[in-house]
Amino acid sequence: MKIAKNTVVSVAYKLSDAQGNLIEESDEPMVYLHGGYDGTFPKIEEELDGREPGFQTQIQLEPQDAFGEYDPELVKIEPRERFPEPLEVGMQFEGTPEEGDEDLDTMIYTVTDVAEDKVVLDGNHPLAGMALRFALTVKEVREATEDEIQHEHAHGADGLEVLDDDDEDDDLEPKSGPTLH
Image 1 (cartoon, rainbow, N blue to C red):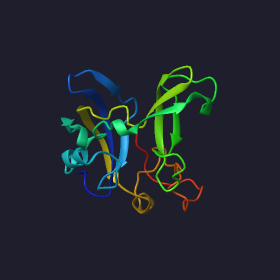
Image 2: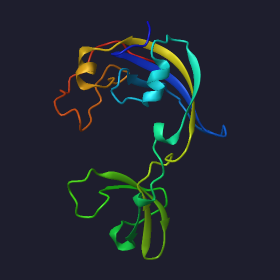
Image 3: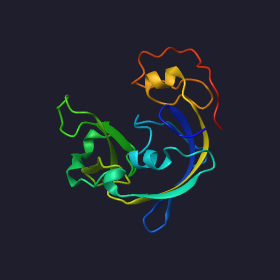
């Protein structure tokens, strides 16, 4: 079966920086609903459209096509007393870019430095500003279920729905359908 809109695609990947240094290699394939549902980067969807299982490719994404340019405005310095103990570099917290502005979407901030009385938080994705190379292998392609199309994402590879905050209308019943491995 060829990859097309409303197919569920299983892709093994290796992610490297532009110099070829390995960043991540998938233990389990990435599974996404193809067709503009934001399950993967648009340039990856474009490259895989019309392909079949076994297809292999390498694609480089510039920052604007991946995690965006690095934005120094997303770096914040906060008073140390606002944070729990123990506090370590690498810990993540959710918050809004401007304190007290509940209308803004929350972001994930990563602790990048801890001083005696200050904490440096970075709201950029860790890979922001980087050109990335993906080595991709299409493992499986199948038709999406009506539930997957309605909810605009592939359901769990074991056939069970994985609930998230966007799926408030989902029930807790197991979903039937083929499994991907």
